[in-house]
Length: 418
Image 1 (spheres, rainbow, N blue to C red):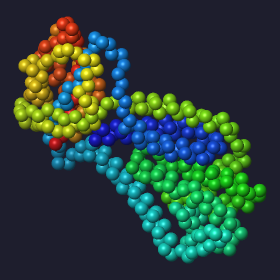
Image 2 (cartoon, rainbow, N blue to C red; image 1 turned 135 degrees about the vertical axis):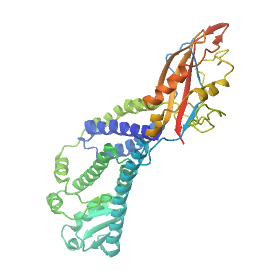
Image 3 (cartoon, rainbow, N blue to C red; image 1 turned 120 degrees about the vertical axis):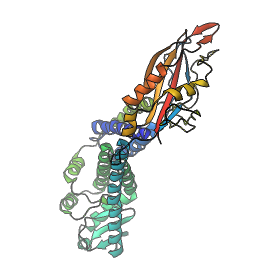
Image 4 (cartoon, rainbow, N blue to C red; image 1 turned 120 degrees about the horizontal axis):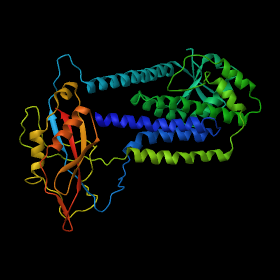
């Protein structure tokens, strides 16, 4: 759950930066095709950047040694009353309800669209194929089909409507809409995806208007038609869109943007690099240690696959000839932790779990110093992890080239409710 929430937050942060750039630098320009491509590409980047991992090693001198210890899994049973709902379960319930409601709206739209298609009559004019229905709908297209109200069958406006919707079809605008529709269903809590869906539809209309404007010397009839169309509209279709009429008129009257303004896109490179660096923490599916005993019946420490917030390998940033050794041997370390760490009752009551990553230093005399949390979950779990690390006995210090040296360790402790 903790990793999923982190991913959702990272997606929201990424999409926020990208959409903010679009609003500041691109929306006012008339590079409609470029704007459309930008919105689609940044949707993909927002979803994938959190998965991009790069190793970051900076400021480490040759006298500093670091090693990742194998992760420890601390299991416990939830302490919940019969009527108590854990925070994690409540969050999951709210998320699934949002997905269910938006999915229901999406599939209801598909069902309504299919009903119109089944009851509509086929029509054709000047090579255009379309569906005529008696239902009060605004003209729209979906995939490769144009849908019209029967009143437009013999209308002088029919040619303009068919040209408009055929451009939507040739440009594959339905695919764009469905991609954003899917993103807004799965990430319904992310306002930037909803704004992106609205913006991609605007760019679709601007693209079509621009093509029509370039191919027609007289567009007054076209603009009047835009003002007078009405009827049922579907979120998943390319509608002959009235709400955007004022904005579209302004765009049609706007002077074309200079070619040089396209180079604003280069400014997104620092954004992408910055997001990758921000989200890059080396992750892994590391296997935890098997422990056979515990002094607390609520604690079970066993072999398990820990989530991907952990290092991919037991990396050594700088090789040391003799690493520090826990008292009695490193195999005693997980046993010591299992006998002394406790899953806080309050955390179990609240359903709090996750991986706490602790860093500490074994000094030249074997003492434990500089114990700190580098990735926390909750103050209760964080403090328990710090407590048990600080109470460790002295280690045999690390040696390099015959001299005792400080050595830094990173220890992941996975608190997991059974």
